Each structure stands twice: as C-alpha cells, then as structure tokens.
Length: 384
Image (tube, rainbow, N blue to C red; front, side, top):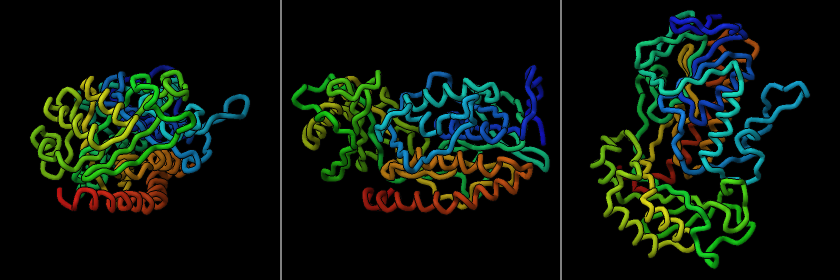
C-alpha cells in the first residue's frame, strides 16, 4: 500500500499501518469518517478549508437507535465509546447543537496521533492512478494516499472526481432561516414545560417551523437554562437568495450570513413571527432577529448515482444531500462513515472494498434523498 506523501517528510515516528487515507472536509461527516478509518487501521490526514474556529451551525437530530453501537478501538480496559456516544456526549436529548457535536468529535480526532487535522487547507482537485489517489490544495501541494474520501459537503470537490457527469446538487426551492436563543431571554410564563425534549413542528400558510429545545451550555435541561433552536422553512424569498448570489441558476453557492440579511428582511421576519408562531418559538425568533443573528441556508438536494470511483469515495452531504426535514442527515453520515470503514478494514483491495461500500449505502442514500424530495416539491410548489 502507498504511504501518505505530499512531497515533504511525513513526520518522525509515523509508522505505516493498514493503509493511508486523505479525508477532504472536517465537518461532522469528515470527523466521523476520520475516526472510523482510524478504527479500521488507517493513518488519516484531514484537510479542512476553514480555520480552527468552526461555524456556529444550528442543531441536528441524533437518533441513537439508528446510529447503533459500533465501537472505536478499545482502550486498555477493553471498552471504548461508540461514535454515537462520542457525538452525543452521553446526552439522551434527541436534538443537539451542531457546535457541541462538532467540538466533541474534533476533540476525539485531535487526541489521536494517527489522525492529522490540517485547517485552512482548501482542496482544488483530486485524481488517482493504479497505485494511489491524491488531493491537490490551493497552494499546489499534492497529498497521495491509498484512498481519498470526500466529506466536503454539498458543493463537494471530490464529487467531481466520482461523478463528473453529475457534479452539482440542485436548489430545492426554499430557504431555512436558523437561530438558537437562550431560554433565559424568554419570559418564564412563556417557556416550555420541564421535560419537553422533543421538537415542535408547526405549519402556518406558506411556512413551516421546527422548534427544538437544546441543552444549555452547561448541559442543563432545566427550564430557563436550556437553549431554543429553530428552523423556519420559507419558500417565498428565493429572489433574495438569487440577488445575493446565494443561488445561481439551480445551484446553491452559499448561505446568507446574518450580516448580509437586509434590514427589511429582518423586519419582515419579526412581523411574520408575531403573526404566525406561538410561544416560546415566537420569542426565540424575535430574540435572534433583534440581535441580527439569523442565518439563511438555501436547501439543496442531490440523489447520487454512485458513491465511489476507483480509489475515490464520498460520504455525508458530498455523497447525498437531503432536506433537513428528513431529520436523518447526521445519522446517514455516521452510517456512511462506519460502512466505509467496515469494508476497508482487513483488506488491501481498496477498489473492491469501496465497491462494497457503494453496494451497502447507495440504495439507502437514494431513498433518503427521494423521501425528502416529496416534502420539498409539495412545500415549494414544484417551482425553483
């Protein structure tokens, strides 16, 4: 098997194990994949285009039953937490703050000497030959490994190498306004009752709102100490997304940052929140609007025809992009990561292992995206 190289010394003391992997992207799917590949005996280099301070994110569902009990390599006592346990921090809450999950997984990756995490490293292309695959960075460096995994999101660079005839996810026809407020900002009489730990799903006119209680910064679920996350599905502001360059044609280019949301849009959201949504979600939205702390995320979708090409593979939103309404994005990414590691473990036949991974995950990934498309087409009226 090939040794990971980028034209520079690979570091004193590094010993080749079963194989080497480059993971492009170190968000949730990338971290899950890096940890899983370490379990499979791979030395892993992760390339993340952003800096070490992660984006704030919103929230995500973590379903313990779906994520199962696959375990990381055991420590000296023969026990180790599952990836789900690492991600959830042992909390029984079905919804977690993105930033908290990311911090836990990143800490686990950084604690292992066989996982190298490089920030501020943008990948501009990938390639392969009979002996290795490689990723090329914006500085001109090329990193070769036995396998290159794309965990680089809905605008994946690695996807261009896996599916060059179908490289782009497409706009689903609506935006998701996102925010997280401290419950302490909500009057006591308007807070959720103690023990309310499930999302609320509300419909009003053209809109849909998902509100979800989250543990406080200290992990508390006590009334007044929690956080209130919300996701407002809105199909009425597509012109704004195009005006701001967030959507070009049918392709989602980027999110609308809180400081790029126009003042008149903030005012419209506040007025609509007062008319449409009950407490405490109305209060949580108004708190974020007042602080100008709302992010607009155009929703993209991608139904994959393939997940691998030779020594290149895709996981997470690089592989399949589904609406958040499915509530399964994190779970699917974890299942991708574990299936990939399971097929690579114990074999030197990388191409055959990746084909096995595709056979395991492709059908389910396609079904997941299509199930969400039924909602998207109904919600957005079929027009992009």
